[in-house]
Length: 300
Image (tube, rainbow, N blue to C red; front, side, top):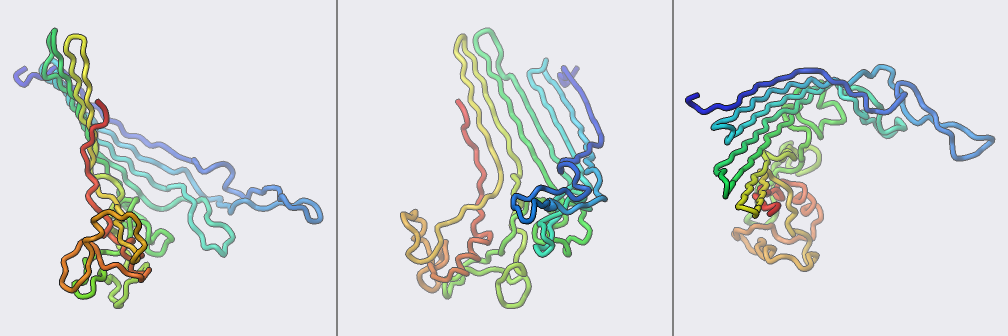
């Protein structure tokens, strides 16, 4: 045809899968023999029972398209998936005075995992003497908490947030260095004039990459082969800069010299201090998050 399509395929699927991977017989109390003997051997309960839990349900949607062009010298594949998990079977956290850390139960929340996956294969050159083939892949994955009734009153209030990924990093929001005294500044979310946990904790960043993938090239000339593969990733990550108590940094990199030492100085790091609380707050803030994106030669 006019646009050179040599192959085309569409596919899709939708289904429900269940999960009960929490061990056996948690719906009633299980007992274990005590290792201690006192007036005979006794038995101890090993779990709190819950007779009302059900299957965890995952709703899976997959759509994909494959296209070949120019006698399959260009092959493109695009996949989209969306998985929604409900009734998650979890060990629900309990206060320590109960005697057990958790009890198996269904979490009345809906979690969505979705994403796009791309694959592009090309053959720019193909003859009896020289062949060049390329392979490009990229994935964009997202995770989101869609619903969680009474999240603020649950043990997960400082772990999850509606509309955000499950793997969140929490901490203080860094506002920079006070030019007068060189101390790090943080956002006072509660408005009480103090920086404290958990009142001033906020979501800093999700622990998932924006996208990642790989680029491969394969060359063949007569009896010689050369394969080169690069990987790439776009994300942020924590890098704990060598800011600490005065005199405690041994063999530090030269970058620590760029610290605040006098009023009005525009420095990268706050002034060194013996105040452990200041150091702790700094380490628990987004001052330590940097662009960790890379393009790496993995194999040649």
